[in-house]
Length: 415
Image (cartoon, rainbow, N blue to C red):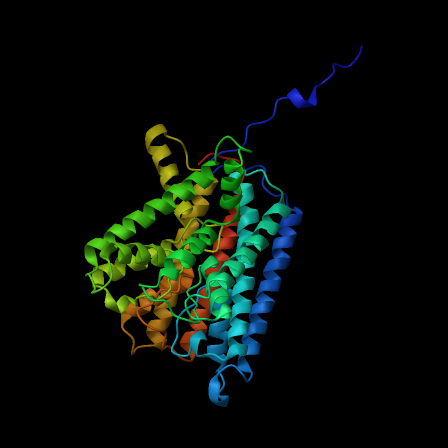
């Protein structure tokens, strides 16, 4: 009996996975992407270690002075994890060699986060692109950011300053060579859009691009959730800054609120230090900076999509009696680990830095765990406290990526 002919073009195609669905699909134990991610993670750690050693040598600070071992480790980890804490002896005080080392670490950290987060989110969201496309897009985003920065030298007359600022913005890093002010137009024109693109990540960029080119009928639910939640947080935080922050002479309150909202929820660049804000505003800003963007880009912290998974699962349980999924438990565990890391860092800093107020140490601890870089003022901690912060920054970045890959390997369940 002849076999029926099957027209491949008209054969049923399974629907694209939607929304915060986690696929059976995720990578098998020997998926090349998992092996590649492990190799990339090891390489990132080695580059960070090499950066710390490079910063110990001469040519970093003027006058023939040297960075201490704790300060070198702190600066290297702060750059590689895309935290970018401002410090009394910061990047802006470095000689060209030291600035070059920090820039290299930020660029590597940005590429590392975009690639690993993108590969994981590709499996989480169901965006139909190849792993190679994710890697190439991450490299292209880094290259475009550098070109944009070179074309606008950030009002300093220095091409390197512009490139440094643009790449740091894409990486959601608060590091700077030339500290922008709230009145700098380049801040809005250059840093804010790049920080949003980097925070949303490769997968959302590819998904939006496919939709604009009409290659897909709709955005994935993951991308829609990331875009809507990010816009919502930006609007809410801008309204809070507008209502609570006192107006300053010569600066539009609306413009100030927009800039501060964008910076606080992304890079944490100190266009204004938190000491200039009221106590309630400091608390709100700390909470929003700890939340970050949707995970999968260069942002870390709790993640808006993490909170969306938890809220969606709880709502489904209350409304339909749906039992919690594994993604829900993974998300709750990640939030608890983040809070535990913040608490442990705070307690250790309270012990090592008794001269600093407890609320300031809590903000620094939260920023280190979230890789946000927001502080009350330049970090003046020395010695053991710098090792504590370095460990918290490294753990915060590692935990967020491990959480994403756990979601990527979770069997398909709608959450």
